Image: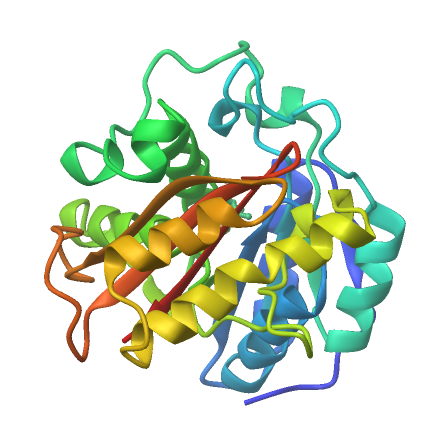
Length: 286
Ligand code: PAF
């Protein structure tokens, strides 16, 4: 389904982005289809993977780059979150994206923080939602806006791509799309890992060499759990025993409900931990 791009265009305004989308869709071969990859920038090969898949499956590919203040808590890393638009645009051009939507905060929230937000509900208040109160309300609110801003005017197919590393976010986006009847197909894309097994994350760039080595306890422990070499308690102890690593949670859940279950094939193991000052998450289907 890929089509030669006529050059990657970066749009800052919602009107400009919608007009550019309509142009590209109008010029695309029939049946036109649109893939959106929502990101917060600081792109890495994991994002590249999402964009390349979107490129294969759609005639037009748009990527949003927006560090969404609503999903950061007061003590989190909003101010220091890496903003690397020039490098992001280069990577996106290589991956074949057509349009980048990189709005300033005032474009997305012209009246300041929105009064009305999406509420993630029960599934958004456990695990990462318990550790980061309000995070998923903020993430779903911006995803909802991005889907509405991007939704094609004609009945073209519309797909949105999310990484499976943020498994709880992906589940909640799927729920929101189903519960609100949003006209988009959600595509979950497997985690991309470095050669050493660490899941790619924009926050990995905060880690120094020793912290990066310590962070490997997360994928290693998930693999040991999946192989039945460790039970859940021993797995938790192993993460906590690693120097400089503080476990937030390590659980095995039903992937559709996030309800804890006994480790068994098809269950989802989720881990979150602080490595130095950096919060990392990872997961593995057992
Ligand atoms: O996963 C992310 O990068 C963000 O949570 C998202 C989906 C782009 C919303 O800001």
